Length: 122
Image 1 (cartoon, rainbow, N blue to C red):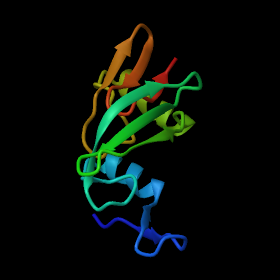
Image 2 (cartoon, one colour):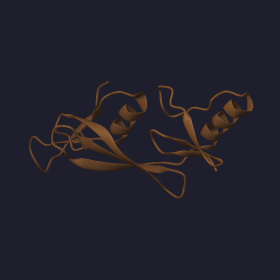
Image 3 (tube, rainbow, N blue to C red):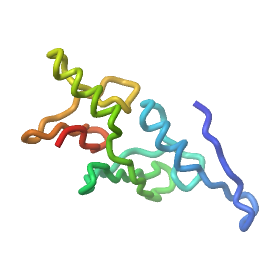
């Protein structure tokens, strides 16, 4: 998957990776580019839930060891509906955001994606 890069005019030769491309690569299950644009790849190092049902994910570059966090929005009504339909038909609910099958984990009554930390049921 190609990564869109924007050039930083303040520093010749420096690049900035666009946040949407990092998140898109993460959801597609591909190689996540370095969050600061060194050209390396990064890995997920931390997932934190937020009170609104969204989450915060941290990526660290394997080459330059720089970290950056990204806020993931809470589940949309359509995503919640898809999870509810899976439960109603006795199927294992999976995260509707990931391209690859990522089962949701139960925490009490809540259903949370273990990979991105987004809460899909209260």
